Amino acid sequence: MALTKNERRLRIKSRVRKVVSGTEARPRLSVFRSNKEIYAQIIDDVTGKTISSASSRDKDISSATGTKMEIAALVGKSVAEKAMKAGVETISFDRGGYLYHGRVKSLAEGAREAGLKF
Image (cartoon, rainbow, N blue to C red; front, side):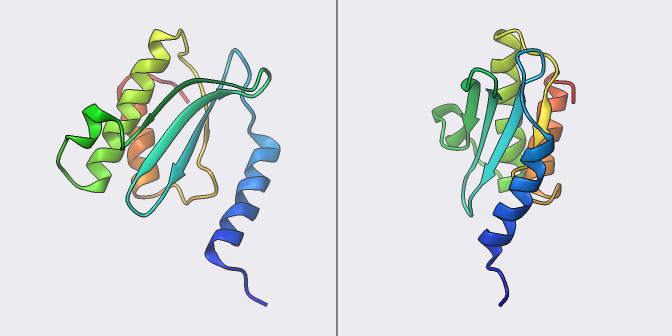
């Protein structure tokens, strides 16, 4: 029987998470994408704490107009700026089982422009 899209994504996500984990020196940038919104968190998996987060539902970003791709880039810049304030410069990118294309790629490029290295 064929897998649903979500089941397939969760399988890919678990495969990626076997390899990618966040440490204090190099936390993980996790991405979740819904049909309308996009969310990003920088996580230290050793302690289980979220260092910074941003989403398209934040007040400063939700008031911005543009395509979903442009808003994803703003989310990437926002999460990167918050991470830099917390003292994080290098991260490992967890695409969450999504293809590195479209909004996920736009978020990653926005984070790179703001100064994160991965």
